[in-house]
Image (tube, rainbow, N blue to C red):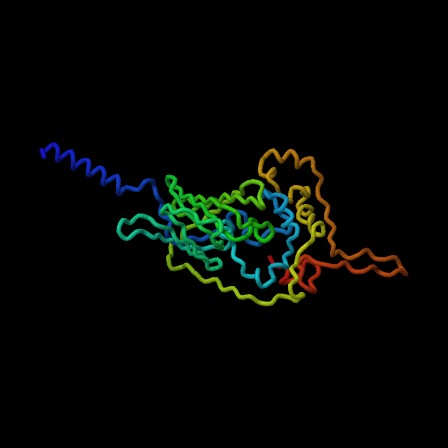
Length: 331
């Protein structure tokens, strides 16, 4: 082989080697310990929790709305719900800390997966980066689901299926086990922006988009992986009773709307509320009026007896009355 031929062959071989070892697209390092910041945005939802009928800005359909109107906070006192895990497209919104690390092939060092340990409810999550397909629809569903990721420039896009039923808004708007969530991870310095786009054919009329910012913790040893949660008996009720409201019987429907001088329709959610044109309709709707079902009955005229005391409460545990219903009413 001539010198020119050998040089050309070596050049071609070098170019192939460089092409083979270079990443197909940009990749960002998300490894480390990250902390959520519930005070930065969406505080009422991510910290204290939403009011009973507060579906504003959620593209719920009729099924999701009816589920929310039937919800009674005392349900969380049932043992099977006390330690119920937040599913993957919601868990980033609450008290949150996460350690992320990579799994790479020991020979080629190609990225196989990202692993995520989440402090809330001690969850473990794998995001497969090796191109494997999602399993059959009949495969088991878990709280964190099955996730695959691809790089779009400096942004990591993750598709998650096979999630159990959970929440779109904590406690009162459900997410079905047929939901699919698309996450976008973006890093700017020490800030991780987490965006989720969730499609739920059972409870949503349109995709629901949420975002959160998280910050990198400089101390890698600060991560606490434990989340102790014990089931206990809260209150007394007949065995098998589940706190709920039947259709049309929720006495608190108008409370949030009236307290904030809003029309009732505004608090019931729906895809139209996601667009600026809805402001014109809001101006034409009457403000909701709320009558507290636990307010004292008007005093009877002299010589006449009092009527029966109003029944019920917001919680649903036996003996719970009024708004201070104790553990059965906790968020």
